[in-house]
Length: 181
Image (cartoon, rainbow, N blue to C red; front, side, top):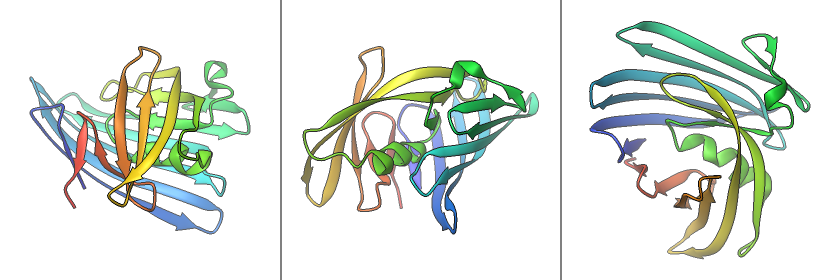
């Protein structure tokens, strides 16, 4: 469970489930922020190598329910069942409202301390469900106090420090979320 630090009130709950053919991330979040009120529910499926195979995101707001479905077959993507060539080559999905999806690249990349890597990502803006292709950089630092440490950055040269537990799940995401439980 994470408390959002970047909104008036926000609380998210998520879990990582091991399955026979990969992993499933399940999460939900409720947010109140400057007139915006919504809940976000999502599922992300990844294969055994932690590469995203698909995602389903649902937003519930005063405007009703909206959904988005992404699917990957190798390097090719679909958005709501239609080809999405702008996402081709992305290996990860990042649902903007949660720190849970950062677990996928952290686990998949297997970086050593001091190592970094840039990756193409399908970034889902919440609550509007727009999908953007972006490049993200993960850099692993020396562990501290029993926690893994990473710096996550995006093309706008904005970077955030992430601390993770032994499973690669976010404990603290600088300025965005902190684990409650």
